[in-house]
Length: 253
Length: 260
Ligand SMILES: Nc1ncnc2c1ncn2[C@@H]1O[C@H](COP(=O)(O)OP(=O)(O)OP(=O)(O)O)[C@@H](O)[C@H]1O
Ligand SMILES: [Mg+2]
Image (cartoon, rainbow over all chains, first blue to last red; front, side, top):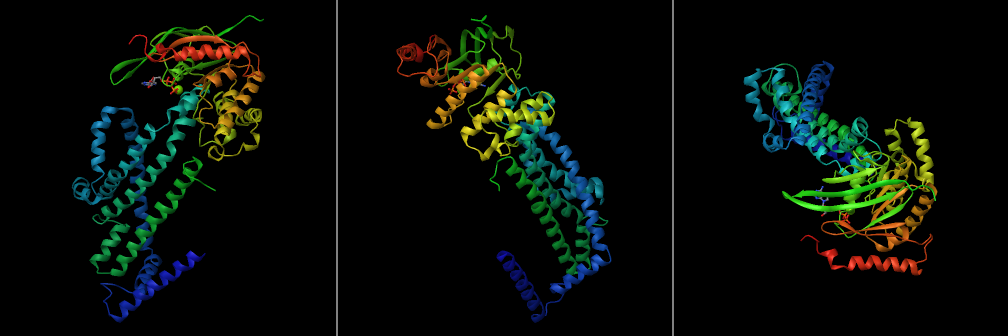
């Protein structure tokens, strides 16, 4: 409760200082609009539906890319865990790919796919496939052998063993992979959208720049941060925490 | 006496592992037999291959030569007729206590309700029915091992294999668990193969003790403990068994491998 009050007070103060700086220094709105300017942009953006359409289009795009990346990443992860030769060759490339920021793929994607949705989805897949592939591989390699042996001497095998032990033992690591992949997908989405045509958060952001509408630019940046925070920290963060408690990896209650 | 039924038989069993591309012989020419309703302790120093022997009986380790027979048939793969209890408990952390005990029953196609009902009876047997809804990390080491024993007994194995099950417990807990195990043994009359490296633990529990020597592991002594339970540690018979075992363990041959 106390923390909540402090937070409210902090944000109120922040907005006040922001407002005062803008009015006292007479900063033009295309450099820095007042908080009310940004609020206006949000209000009309949502009222006229442009922002809703942008958010909706972006979410569809990122979800398509994310789920394709999950399917591909889980298969790659299983193969890397099963085949040592693949791991020391292809597996190294994957590690190297991880240090390439998503925006570096944009020129390549544009040349291959044009300024279309497919270019963005391609970039999302490239980014999001890595964490889930690595998590799947580690999850498979880290299944405690005694748990499998215990299960076998209790009569569990084949499908029962897979369903009740192998997959269960992999879940905490997989959930971490799901969260990281999502975070990567979200960042790749925005990077890609800045360069393509159509509706979306990134396009709206870029449109704001070309119209020198700083209020719109700030509204979109806020939207990116808010959706990212809600999905990564609140949604995936909560699931991950619950799983870790249920699996006894973290103290609970 | 009834006809004595052979449960487990090792015939010239040898086992090597590949360590750094080198064949490492762990067990050599092992011959012994374990009979129904017997409590046998396998005693030996660290690294002598005791866990490997249990793995061979359970079926998740294959011998290089010789035969491991269970009910006169070669062991092919693990199944619930030979359940294993591990030193590190090996409970499933994502299941609560009751569902851990019910695990093997679900593999036998029991309905969920029936599996839980049966599991509760076994949890009762080890005195933990009050903890059925707890999670694994909410109970102590001694309790975890009781749950592991209940989980193994619930699948009604013919043989209960135990790999230093009380090794991680403190002295007090350990003694309680030994008494508890003997109570369960006299109640269920399972065949038990119990691995330990404590001479006194073996003397307290076993009908018969198999002493395994080191590098490579082989049978040094197969000795019956001719004392009824509960055992008086001052009894001359027990004292003589103890001395025979300690003599064998002190044998230099025991430390220096026979074929080195
Ligand atoms: N899978 C394996 N691969 C290679 N070597 C192994 C393997 N399993 C066991 N060993 C080796 O075999 C030897 C015997 O192991 P084992 O676990 O059977 O001994 P133990 O008598 O149970 O010892 P402890 O009392 O320490 O549990 C050890 O030297 C060990 O390093
Ligand atoms: Mg061992």
